[in-house]
Length: 260
Ligand SMILES: [Mg+2]
Image 1 (cartoon, rainbow, N blue to C red):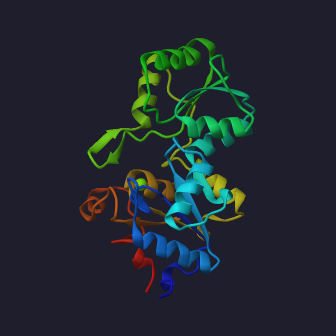
Image 2 (image 1 turned 180 degrees about the horizontal axis):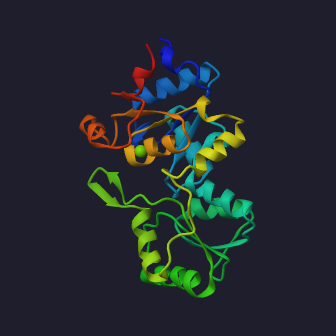
């Protein structure tokens, strides 16, 4: 099995996680085979996910258990993206509405996680409460804190159907703060891909973005003028492609179709 001709010239293969490499907690078998094939060819494989609940180290461990070894420098979760963005812009403290992975990345970047903070960082938080929304929105509205969203995904898919995503929490805080976010670093915004291009010294033409959602993965590829592949192992179905304004360059039934 070799890589199909049309994909051979890409240097960086940027994979989304959920719906592409795994579904819920279950790895997609063809994905493991294809990723290891790409790695054996010397291609750069990166994970790019809007999920902010895990840190890079947590994702490295998840991938390792699946049989994929990626260096930390190839893992771009929105928790890490948020930490890089804040430190690049000189913020030294953040109030976090989010989970342990997000806090871990911020602290690793030297950002103090506390209530009286210069920035408010909002991600997925399965222990969201009225008091957290109140603290975050008051910091933004009354103290002028910088307001960062890890992503605006309205929902995420689970075995039981769609559940509220980070975007629903961001929206609640925006309404209470009477102010939209200052920045959203998640897909379809280009920030994490800009980091990848900088860290791995790559041009948009050298990257192919692989995802299962038209409105995030494929739209993000368009924004950075990179080629994109939609895989039908997750959220989007073939009929969705025809209805959508975001057209992928390639549509694959599953990742094994990257090979021939
Ligand atoms: Mg996905």
